[in-house]
Image (cartoon, rainbow, N blue to C red):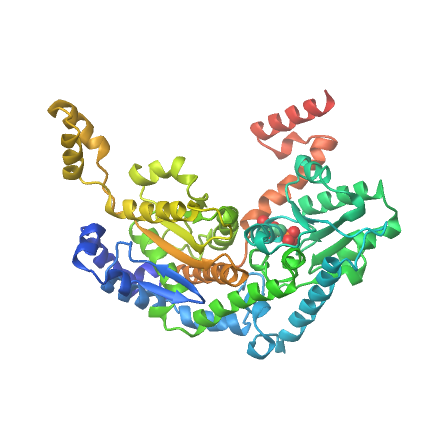
Amino acid sequence: MHTTALTDTAAFKALQHHHAKAVTWHMRELFAQQPDRFERMHVRAAGLLLDYSKNRIESETLALLMSLARERGVEALREAMFRGEKINFTEHRAVLHTALRAPAQACDAQVDGQPVSQEVHAVLDHIRDFSERVRSGAWRGYTGREITDIVNIGIGGSFLGPQMVCTALRNYRHARLTTHFVSNVDGHDLDEVLSRVDPETTLFIVASKTFTTQETMLNAKSARAWFLRHGQQADLARHFVAVSTNAAEVESFGIDPDNMFPFWDWVGGRYSVWSAIGLPIALLIGFEHFSAFLAGAHAMDRHFRDAPLEANMPVIQALIGIWNRNFFNSESLSVAPYHQWLRYFPAYLQQLDMESNGKRITRDGTPVGVATCPFIWGDVGTNGQHAFFQLLHQGTNVTPIDFIAVLKPSHGIDEHQDVLLANCFAQSEAFMRGKQADEVRADLERQGVDAAELAALLPHKTFDGNRPSNTLLLPELSPHALGAMIALYEHKTFVQGAIWGINSFDQWGVELGKVLAKTIHGELRSEPNPALHDASTNALIALARQARQA
Ligand code: F6P
């Protein structure tokens, strides 16, 4: 708990003062004056490299941001998290996703005085055993055929992580296995997946921390009904497994307790990919690779916990985000992975960051007083370049960008990788440099454009540049590197939440919609109750009822 509001801290005030100077800098000049700028402004950790030199910062900026982190108690909160203190105080829960990827001997986390490592490793053993049986063909469907398709039914954190990782690591997949993800309660989602799979060879994973989420439970019931049109009740045990913290609900759904993979309330949904929620990943890429994925995250955890703030990759990334958000007022952060298989990474980050830090009240119950989480959005490069990058270059808002590049491709097609990386590096250079009026003028004169035309074109073809970006380099898209990258973003989110003084681990805002949806669902199926709603909602309900009856 902080006794001083963020804006009243000495470091925040010093940064405000410093910002008045920073608005006069142009990165193009900073680079021209500082040949060692990259050397001073990059950091390596867990096999990754973060180049943060293309930001509107100087050494003094970084020093002041580090003071801010210290003044806001980032180090103490970090220790509290790793040790298992109940820092998610609105739900009275510890926050221990780091314990899910720690080797037994390296885990000092305890909840209510009990070490957690043994339970974690018991579940990992279950995952290893089960995934090996499915992969080897020892686990078979009800007609004796091997499993070929895995359908994960889950939403939010019970979907975004496994889908993103299974897509990113498809190079490691088992040749016989295909993963599918059903998340949307829109029946088109389930219908489409069921049309592609065979009940005799399909394994359903019902993944839900609470096992009460409306969308997931309806999808699971419909999938079970579909299965029972082919197999018998007794066959369900070979085709349905569950991942949840809620053993009672799993059992009442009809899933054999032996086929349940548990996790714990100290694992937040959006931090759960390392838990049994990662079961589809272990099935697809094998337990050895899944372990490497956990090891990559653990390597980043070690770095985050042990490295001094000044050389700490998640801390630096978080503080630059604070600088852009709270001093330069950037409203969003665009994420541009230059790898086709990282196409779901922006969506994954949306939940991680926006569900964690989309808050306006501090831990002591008062308004934060500054802007918190920016909107997170993006798409793979080079597709984004041909869609929304124009706005990023010349639009009226300055949007920082995280470029993510993978140095070694997983394909052998000549030339593509060089073109891909050239585009990635060219974009960050263009955002930084811009194009000055004298350069545009020289270009146009070379082309022989007359003076009147030149004067008319000049403002359109000139752009300021000075637009900030980070570039994160992965050596290759391996389980280890991916694990490290996800953990990097988790810790970045944590540090920003600590600076803003918010609880990054609850999500009360999404609850209201869930409650209202239950009421309206009843009204769509039986009698509407207009007294409960506004005119707009009543009209929409009436139209939907008419469409059902038509
Ligand atoms: O969107 C709200 C939320 O509670 C997320 O935090 C969570 O990841 C998702 O719903 C799914 O919850 P569950 O895993 O309990 O089905």
